[in-house]
Image (cartoon, rainbow, N blue to C red):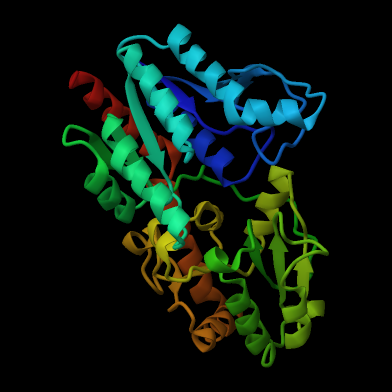
Length: 394
């Protein structure tokens, strides 16, 4: 059995989809499975230019851009590839490289990708498995609901298996999959972290938030309001640090920061590509807030940055919304607050800043959870066993 993992890849690092893909692959390798990461599009994230080889090996995992390295002369060529030609190349790759008893593992929410890769896998008598990390087309508008219905009604029954990041997605897959499909839960994955020697460069305690700054998913306005409230009694000089694609001079939340009077206490660090620097920023934080409102998207998801914070041993503040509900316990391995409760979040911030030993113990318990349960080694073994069971059922 060989696993062809059609996912995301970027050297030396990337956002959550890239990290998830690498953890999946490393976990399978650790379990003794043969695996390669296959990437459909050369320009796979925001049409950015990348300069590494089209195929090679990274941290013991083979990768391949199945359509080779591209140098586009204009935007028309790029759009043709993204909409049609690259998918055709991916299908051809499956037809010429995949054999009976192999697994085509699809980490993509694109319906056309799913349909094309699954059909190609079945032509080779291989299994087609879909990785679900969020509800398909999670919007509440008519178009999103229509696309979600089409994917669930016509695509899901054609798949041999599903791996789901949360229990909510397991239920969703079961409701739409064929009766013979196998379904398992593979939660967030994060590699165990050692303490870094490099400092953060800040001489005061700080709260760190890495990744996107989207109100619907990340609850940024609530974080800012709670921080402003906590600052009224703060004597430590605590700062709030955002690092990610939206934390720049064009950040949509700057007017709110100014209105709340905390603009000078908020640091917009921008997108940090250096993995060691990002890890250091997380590890030296006094705490991190991974906030989730209760909506369809967050209810089904499980944040990668939550795993990174837990693995760093830093006290985590979150809400009981999403896959974390099954693993996190308030006051034991995390601090759990109700979504929308600004006063409760502010009080929790104040508690962590003034109760260092108790907060440190909670952070240590969170790290133990991440190292034992969310490690690629642990979940890779389960995933490999899932694939083996699927192959036996042919």
